[in-house]
Length: 449
Picture: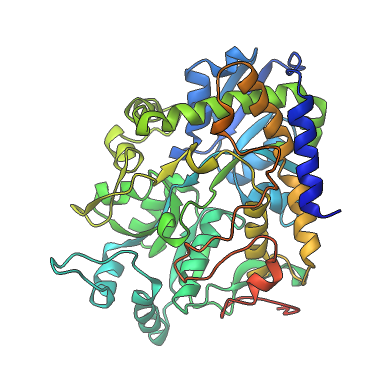
């Protein structure tokens, strides 16, 4: 029997057999998050009483950085958290901290951008194609940055950029964009004890927590960064930088954050877990319904200091359907933040496999692995079976329609081959090794650093 048939069979059994979810085994919960717009499903599930509807009494607490957040989920100080999509995968395969973390809920699509300082933007501008009115044509490719980097290299100056964590979407998106412009973002060699990610690099990438990105760039420590909102728009408002490309333009409708829990926690509190997922699905739907009609209210909630704590106008600039690049160059981007549309909440195996391919591409996975390994890790970490049970309960509760979800009787957990990448390369989650051979820059086959 194939992997897909196994997955389909298990989901079908759940959708037919579901007879409601039992009482929560644990009612008082503490969840962690980082101050980013895409933590919204947690805030909304709390503020709108969706957690309480499930008999859950939740505390939501901002964390200092992604490592602290992960460590606190592992040691039980947090019951679960808003996580980078790569964190449960990285932890489970043992890159960095080793722990079996799972996700049954994808929190959003898109939501990131790459920003450069004003000085770097001025140096890039002559290389950027413009329309008849003189405005830059988007998407802006890293080809426009390459001559700038070569100039710094010729002068013996390192070119430093920031991302938020070694297994973050931001790291992989920034690397993807750079490599698509024939710029080498460097390799990891964990088997040699080198986890800097700077081997053979044209650009040196380092970790900076999201809220500190604008100040770190303003200080000149980094020349640009990849981060989630509102920290790109913050650079525009402060007049210190220009977002040059969004992740929507790098990979249209890419999966961004997930809600992660330890596998041990999920096994100990299965009903609690499903009820948490139910509440967050409702929150995600609320965030997107009626063509984002609730977004202004959501922005008001997120601007509170206990959540994101940025000014209303800064958060609204990207979350209400627009995105501002250069000051005054505001464009319509209705899907910059997606929380429910396009099955955004469903934990697709193919999403997990894409992140694993990027870990392999840049050396975080040192050795070649068979396609079956990618499938096995995806199944171990991403749990559409738990999601399906929560969704089925919402349908039975009369709170959602079956048409709002994938067809659990036939869903295999793989998106159709995806073509909307900035370099034009197609991704099919069924063939990760073949996918890796399509890249000019990056490890493939039995390459090893």
